[in-house]
Image 1 (cartoon, helix red, strand yellow):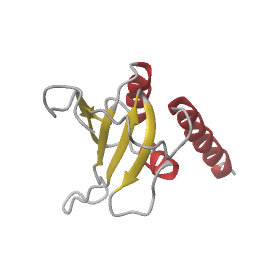
Image 2 (cartoon, rainbow, N blue to C red; image 1 turned 90 degrees about the vertical axis):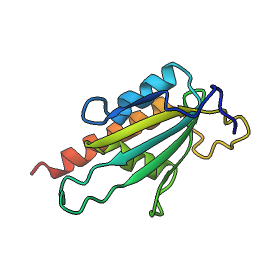
Image 3 (cartoon, one colour; image 1 turned 45 degrees about the vertical axis):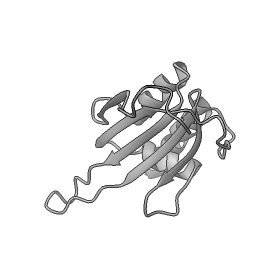
Length: 129
């Protein structure tokens, strides 16, 4: 898992309020980037005691290979769906080479994003009286 660049400086970083995680994953997929994407959620419900959900996604050529949320049992697809629901926080992507890492999700990134959108639509439809 060596870096493809000369340093481990984030190649891309920003706020989820400006660029949602779906947009970031779409960009990384289109650019066929490999590396680690770290997502840190801001807890807007408790500003005096901030707690942060930290998610990590590992990508090879734009495809999400595995995903984890620190301190949670959620991993892979369920972790991705959870992280895609975040509206506040920050992200950083560091290019790395993950050629030997197994693909634990087994689906293209665009399929993950479409399934996440379908789940949001179904949840919204279920909440309408």
